[in-house]
Amino acid sequence: MKDAKKLYIQTFGCQMNVRDSERIVGIMQRLNYEPAGKPSRADLILINTCSIRQKVEHKTYSALGRFKRLKARKPELVLGLGGCVAQQEGEALLERFPYLDLVIGTHQIHRLPELIRTVRERKERIAATTLLNGSPERFRGHTLQIPNPSPRWTSGQDYQIPGNGNRVKALVTVMEGCDNYCSYCIVPYVRGREISRSSDDILREITDLAQCGVREVTLIGQNVNSYRGNGSGTSFPDLLERINGITGLFRIRFTTTHPRDLSEELIGSFGRREKLCEHIHLPLQSGSDSVLRQMNRGYSREDYLHKVEQLRRASSGIAISTDILVGFPGEREEDFNDTLDLLKRVRFDAIFSFKYSHRPPASASRLSEDVPEEEKGRRLGLIQDVQRQITLEKNRELIGNKEEVLVEGPSRRDPEWLTGRTRSNRVVNFPGDKDLIGQLVPVEITKAYQNSLKAEIL
Image (cartoon, rainbow, N blue to C red; front, side):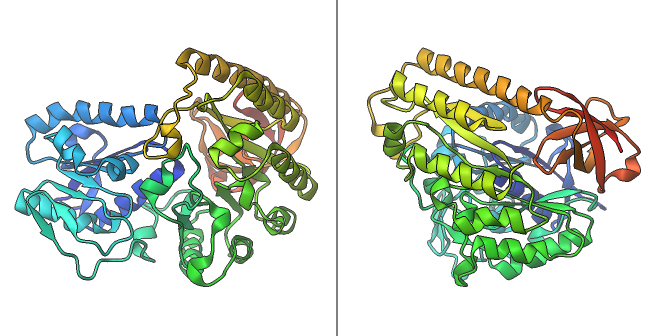
């Protein structure tokens, strides 16, 4: 692009943040911005943040510190911070980091062009963090009324594929926010209450993506099985059925789900929708009923085991991944052993495991029965050791199986090889021609490793 400005984005956290960063790229492309490649070439740097765990939040502050010297050398550079840390801390970030120009909350991405112009033209430092729009924005030094704010979600341009449209997979936001208020979780405070996108907008977006060559979509939201079609009454299984009929689309995935809201209708979708992949991420958090009550999860260990049984009846080969949180305040050794026991009973295909950390204003941050950090580390290590063995065993069981792989691109370790995923979301590497990228390919699994499989094309 002629006289294009340069944009550099650093993204932390979950798929929601990755999708938000893609959306930012799309918005800024229309303002004649193109990717910078590295920070030193940028006219605009945005850090898209996650605050769901303390460790990730600390990475945000480290990243900001690294850009301080660059900002001093290049005063015209606009440095912005968005995402959940921005929403959580707001204007306090401008006080803490005097070289930071812009703090943009999770519901304000659509206003980015206007905010960037204000920073450049008025030389103002801005914190724009209103949830659900409509309230006056507090700017440093003055208050600016926004009488007709743009909608948080707009169909069309904000959701076009960034870049040259050669991607095989895409993330599609279907809802945002959470009404569950789990006691350890900050999401409702930084993403707001649940709100669903229009099903027509979602279908238009996915149809456009499929026409541009995207073959797999992952529907994302803090709790997708709470989707309600923006007031239309459309359920999430209804939405899956409509997406299943889109021409050119090969595969559908979704994340994340809440076990309490996992309906029999949604479970049955795995046996009825041929494009819906046999994989579900179903966060457990703890196998102890006592801890689950303290977490305000709304289900028991037996409830969870019953959901797993229903899923495996509906789809015998379904892969189930989960989240495990160790060291919740007051978690006793017997509570932890309940989690270990459930881990062995379910035999998850993969887990994401973490040590608990206080996340104010979530209610668990006010609990005083802290588990010592050393003990949290011991428990986390035990959980991960058990799961590593289970994952390797389950991968080895696939040797000799014939699997369908969607080819995503060259393998990271060997660009002469291809990589893709099975319907159960396992990474497979195999030799093959790059003309196969974007196609479904039958392979036979020949070797199994901890995190991937090796195969030959049939």
